[in-house]
Amino acid sequence: MTTTEEKTAVGPRRPRAPRPGPGRAKAWATRAPLLPALVFLILVTQLPFAATLVISLFEWNALYPEDRAFSGLDNYESVLGESSLRNAVFTTALLTATVVIVSLLLGLGLALLLDRKFKGRGLVRTMAITPFLVVPIAAALMWKHLLFNPEYGLLNGMLGKFGDLFGFEAPQPDWISDMPLLAVEISLIWQWTPFMMLILLAGLQSRSPELSEAAKIDGAGNWQVFRYLTLPHLRRYLELGALLGSIYVVQNFEAVYTLTGGALDTANLPFVIYREFYKAQDYGVASAAGVLVVLGSLLIAVFALRVVSSLFREEGSRG
Picture: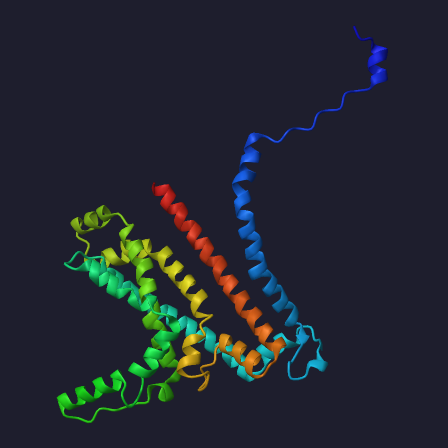
């Protein structure tokens, strides 16, 4: 037997380090294949953004490479202080709000129509989403040359035929010159309405039909069913459509560049980034504008993710 003195001489036994359990090893084995994708994502997205953030703090113009110097937040003051850049911020907000709100309203109307059962509904749904599948630059070119052109465009041609039919001389406006911002908004609304329709149609199909039938049995009309049952059910889907649409529309460049070239007070922040970077060669101001666009998109994305998570929680509770 071991005596007390021998135990004291040997000293107390050190506790063994806990071995990693099979659950932790399994979790790392599951995550390991994702690490290359995560590293690639960081290299492709975060490092360029960090470089843009650093450049935005410098006075850096490619036309005067020797005058590069640290300027702090001066470039951000230029973006928010100069009248042209401040107008671009206002134009971006106005363009985004108009396109998202009108697209939501039109998408809601289409979703309510396509939620009904009728012959050929599948074909109509497929045709309704085709504008969203068109490449943005191709859609802008189509609106500029096929529809808005004052000489051979379809809109002026329809106005001329309408005037001939009723015996008066119809106006032949130059759509892009006379109403430039509205022309850009119309082209974007045409393209984003199907996206809103898809989201709201999914919301309509997730509601319980028994509630609407019970309400109609109790004497509720179609407007009352829509106001007190359908609209509250679609609230989360309306928020999701508005947030996702805002993320993309606030970054839109193709429509402004193709239709107006940023002229006639239609330049938004993405176009200002292009103009400052490629035309004025002012890397500092262009980077500052880019950082502001990214920060605005991130704020919208945070709200979008919260809405998506709440939708998943609601669906999970129903299941």
